Each structure stands twice: as structure tokens, then as C-alpha cells.
Length: 171
Image (cartoon, rainbow, N blue to C red; front, side, top):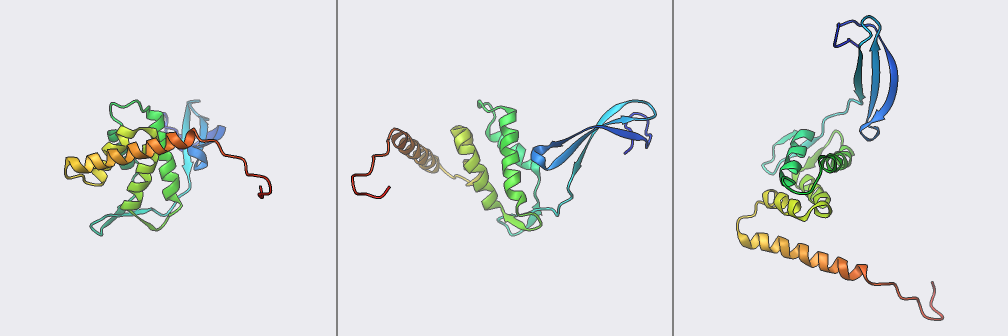
């Protein structure tokens, strides 16, 4: 490993930790010539995941593109950068199970929306409007109506207690 300060090839590892949810190894190194300390990351080299677009073309999965789309949907919303990173990590973990194959952009979009919905409803609607290519106000209203209905159902079911089974019923 080459020292970024003096370009020496001599260094020693001072500390090693896992990073990025166990997908990488973070090493703290010290140059044996100039004593400068620097950090390196090691990743398993994987076959690239291809995203199959609606047009039929395919492109490599890009984490930065995913993060940018999620960040744009979450702009000016009470969603922290850490929450965005966590969401992107979860999605990347889910799609990495398909390593070396193609994943349809439709599946990727649905995965993003399923993670955005509980995080922030406005960000979910923003993302859905672009992803699903809403053409008019009626499509927005339908999506918001579905969210409201689901929210009402969740509130009702949260307040329901399970009733005990009667005598003679198997438990």
C-alpha cells in the first residue's frame, strides 16, 4: 500500500475494523518512512449488478445514482443524511443478493418506495411521482388516498387487542 504523503511502499497496519455493514474492512495504517497515518478500505470484488431499464437496455448499478434519487425525494424533509445512507445501504444489501445478474429497474424502484414509505410519506410521494411517471393530479390524489387508507388501517389495527380463545378452543 502506497503512502499518500510520501509515496513509500512501506507501511504497517495499526487498526482493523469491519465497515459498511461487514461488506468492507477498514484498516488504519502508518507509513514506516514518514510516520503519516492513513485509512484504507478493502472490498470484495464482485461481479457488477446490472439494472435492466424499461427500454430494454442495461447499465451497472450505481450507488451514487440511487443515493442522489433518494436525497432529491427527501429534500427539505425531516430526513437526516444518516437515514438516507442507512436506506441506501439497506437497498444495496438487498440488490447485492442478485450479484452478477440483472435486476429490473421496476423491482429496484419498488424496493426504494417500500423503504421510503415508512421513513417519510412526502418523500415517498415525490419518488413515486417520478418513478411511476404521474401524468396528472388524479394520479397524485390516488397515491395520497392509498397512503391515507393504509394509515387509517394501521391506526385501527394498532388499537386492537387480541381476544382470548373461548373454552375448548385450541391455543
